[in-house]
Length: 224
Image (cartoon, rainbow, N blue to C red; front, side, top):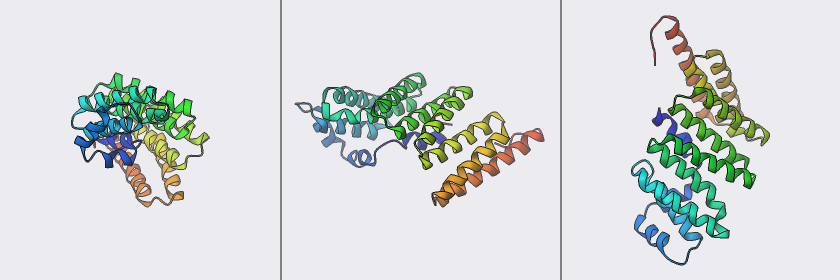
């Protein structure tokens, strides 16, 4: 399950952090120097991103350091959402799902304070991904719907499409095939309007998987 969800979790990372993470030695020197400044926050985040998926404990350390530094430097508070989001991902990769939920809640609260609907929706989406790992599909659907509402209010077409896509996935998992197909068709419609042919094609494949799984259940054997 985790492999399927990692792309959605990483969607909130800034591309710049991945680029910065190429030279960890330089980043370490910047992140540990004095006095504290915005560059230390950015470097700490980049180090956290560099360790995601390979050394989650290190990613957790640098995410927490970035959050602590960002709270001290007035000009660096805009990086708090990235810090909490990366911390949530690090705990997710470490399979500490409860702490991942807490970190993503921090992400949501800071995003709400910033009045960033895009980040609020992404934070709720990530919480839904974690609830899947805990087998709490009811909670997953709840926060996915909340993410959808946030994105609808903000007229975030791509976010809306992703929310419908995610809802379709979870409805498929719980066996509510009619809702799964309905959600995936809505996702496909938004992707088509955005001109995203790849995502639209993927939505069609997802719908096909729903029909196959439905047929497999009907005949008493598991397809997936």
